[in-house]
Length: 443
Picture 1 (tube, rainbow, N blue to C red):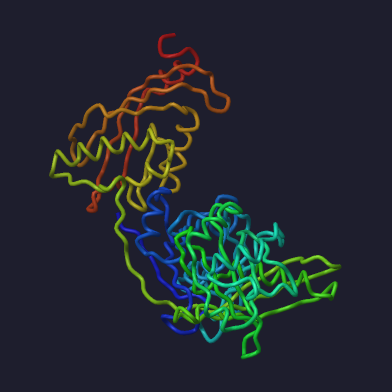
Picture 2 (cartoon, rainbow, N blue to C red; picture 1 turned 180 degrees about the vertical axis):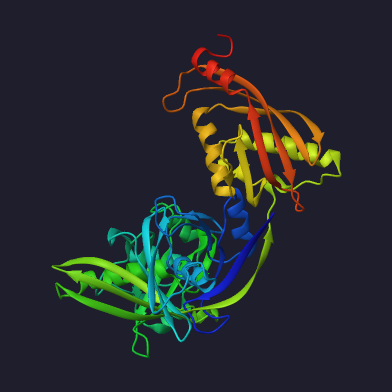
């Protein structure tokens, strides 16, 4: 099946600068494994996958690095808001619009600013308040980035784990040449892993060259040797510096340069609000540039659609479809349907789209945690194919009866030109199903 993607460069006004990001604006039907594969295919520091909102906000967004999913990151939120706004997903924007993304770390508000008929910049509010974790010895940090302990400045703070949704070891260095000399020492990063399973190291120096800060970020154990621009780390740094300001209250802002050493210069605008000695909130924002758009082909279990003219292929497709129902992952079922495909049960109203189809699958999977669906046979009918199945499982879900069920039925498939299910009409004996729920298959 095909999924549209956009690639944009984030925290820059120039194409091929900043931090590249892949955004899939309609990721319904993708499994965790598929999203991880796609992320590794693009091989950027992060890729973003957009789904319909689950809790009534603007969108649900999931973020993956080559090493795995993360709960929050700055540049994917800035870039995702830019892409969706540029594609017209939010309708007409006059001067500004704030949208809210649902993410693992919490709700992430993003304000989109429009100027001269185009999206000018986006600003992300961190989903969590500043959290200060343990300090890390200067010796350990220096070894991990091939420096000496004397290269680390501790006048304001020790190297410290900080987070506003994603943790970083934030460390101030003495000067710009020292920052430029830093590079990964993998054996010492492995020692850092005792503090965090995938430590991310954010180094910075204070400057006065048109920027307030120059920074670099290393996360090799997450598949990111170096990041050109790290919004979540910049938010955490803004919170940390505001925390150590003598002023008990105030609004503070920093212009941060990153990615210079990589040849992808980035500009991040970070700010923090402090009141009565407590950091109240942090933000990071910047500009984006669209680079490309296209489609990526994604197959479930390395073989997606089917060919109606090849009996062997459609049988294999049917077997994989039955297996998908046994995975306890509803997105695996939805992956067999076209983007706007439909599924109805016993002549009920159809569920249209992969997200709605996944909800139907989720309902059965919730009711039968040990559910097994077997493929029984295929029958050709006029303009359709009948997929016969048998479901076996124990009704142990919420409010379940604990009874064993074994029910057979069929789905009438209409397959589209891409070999995916455009329409499925499911049928089974609902009266017999209800009887078995009460008394069991042998009752």
